[in-house]
Image 1 (cartoon, helix red, strand yellow):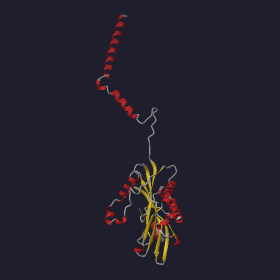
Image 2: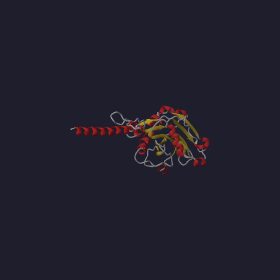
Image 3: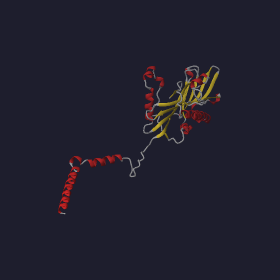
Image 4: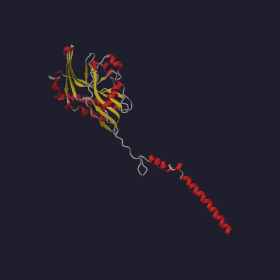
Length: 299
């Protein structure tokens, strides 16, 4: 009996020695940082999660489309003659016509339902228009116009975060086969061989930018007959590249400043502008990019 008890005591002593040695190893200086490092890793892995383990929603202030309207506040009263001395051009402010709001409303209506839209204010004083008449051929050959356009829109959209940007601006068109041009919205009194002809026009241009690098992904003049390009329309005898209509001679204002108070001119431009935007914008916003209108100029 005594021998059995002695053996049990000896075994217990050996086991106690092994447990003490193992405890000393787990507390050795080389392994003391193991505990805190695991806690640190766990802390990092749970960043952005709530106590339930679900991801915390990330704040997203982006929008689908930012809309910039850089036209709609001016109306041009233009007279062209057989010589340059007969030409006369007057730009009349038309803030009361509400074209800026109309353009944004038609653009918003063309954007698919469910897409978020941000109206981005435009300050013309911050970005003065460039006088293209002073450009030389050398300047045009060595300038990166795409880079300039991207930088311009980047500054306009600064502070916003949209996936795409839509800019509505003025389009420029030659008058028939002459060297004269018309731009934006206005009325033309043109001297021809057999008399004078009056044209009311509404020329808008649409650009869609990629919100990441501000490259132009689609662009076109706003057209009523969207099935014919401007080149085809010119071959078919269209006098102006874009929406226009001929008016009777008495429609031309006696004084250019009277145009701002003429409801017939306002409603005529409004109707053409609305129809052209409603027909062109859905095509540009669709799956297939619109063809570049190489014969259209815009500004």
